Amino acid sequence: MARRIRLASASSRRLDWLTNHLLSQAEIEAIPLVGEEQSTDGEVSLQVTQVLDDKISRARLQYFLESQNAVEHDSIPPPNLWVVSDTLVEDPNDISVALGQPENELSALRMLLDLSGCRHLVWSGTAILDFEHSEPMVTRFVESAIVEFETLDESSLNELLSSGSWKGKAGGYDLAGHAASFTQLVEGEEVTVLGFASKAIEEIRKIIDYSDSNS
Image (cartoon, rainbow, N blue to C red; front, side, top):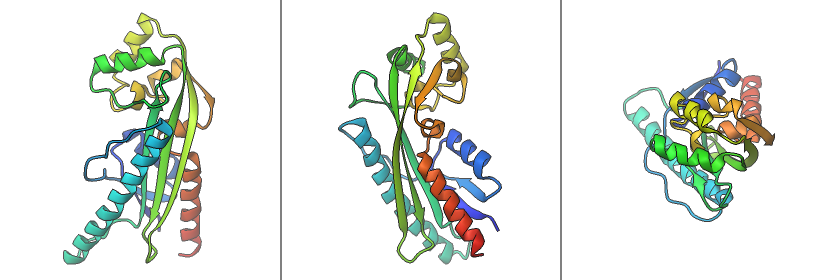
């Protein structure tokens, strides 16, 4: 029986990636965490850790509440393996500024102009929460990758904006989408840019393999 995994994220890109790479090994459901993210400060490398810690705390609480509700209503309990993740694009001009998801086309344009012709860091933090144990096991990973944008002219900018690929994407671009024609992965793993720490994916596979061997 496939291991059930909760991807506690609203990101369609993360769900697509996990589904494409783990579909034969796991049953994946995507349900976002409840609540608002806490504000962060400091260098982006620290911000991603702060956000990850906040998501871990919220995932613990949400699992407990869903489990209690399942007992009270004699319904299916939540999966006991949860994955939370966060990805931040570091402004190439300021290591303390994270380029989040654009609110509209104008903010997407501003971000793309900041990234045009520059190399920048992308940080992904991923945590795996295994509730199968009496004391939940939490494993965290934080990784970075370097992406380089070619200099974007008016035509390129119009293409990226009109495609709508900036919507819901940190930094206003999608490495696996339209932006692939204008970017190059200089260092690190593609999956880090797409939303997961690569070592976390390795750990998930190990957990699944262990579950299969003991089922």
